[in-house]
Structures are given as C-alpha cells and as structure tokens.
Image (cartoon, rainbow, N blue to C red):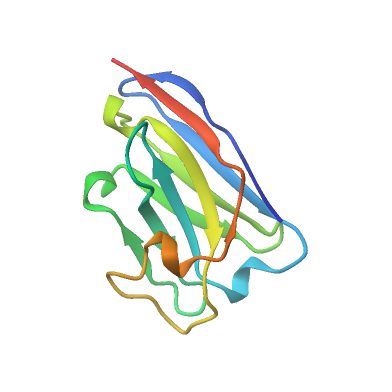
Length: 126
C-alpha cells in the first residue's frame, strides 16, 4: 500500500513537499515514481528513482525545481517541489515500478508501474 500526503494550495513561487509512505514492501528494491494528472489531461511522469543505482529522471518541465529523495529507514519517498507554477497543478501520485538495476529515459511512464497510491491534490494559484 502507498499513501501520499503533503498536497495543498500554494501560490506561484511557493514550495511543497509530498510524501509517499509504503507498507507491505520495501521501497529500496523497486523503481519509484511520482506522476501527476492535470484536469482533462493524461497522467504523466514527473520523476522516477532507481534505488539500485541511484539513477533519477525528471520531466523537463520540473528539472531544477523538483527533487525526489528516499528515506529507507522510514520506507518513504519524497518529492520536494519548489518555484511552483500554475502548470504544476494536478493530482500527484506515487507508484512502484519494476525491480530493475537502473532506469533510462522512457521508463518513467505509467504503464511501467503496477502499484499506485490514491493521490494528493496540488493546486498552484497565480
């Protein structure tokens, strides 16, 4: 089970930290991803992390503003979001992907992820 938290309403330029707590399995053995779904749009990958080799992928739109990290002791993954923009608005989901040694561009996509949290709403006002 994955449970996201930390969403909310924030003004443009502000920051939020999302958390994804896992139970029933350990996060350090699977690719972990954060995804977002804006109203009327498809769910897209924001950032993915491979704990096996530390590879991290970011969507171009969030590079330099978002940071994904993991805390193995707490079995939790975080998404630190800074310099938020109205276009960042959406429901953010964390998900567990395959047990692989690394990830490459093109792998941070929803079909590659099997276990999903319920999502947390992020709204950025202009």
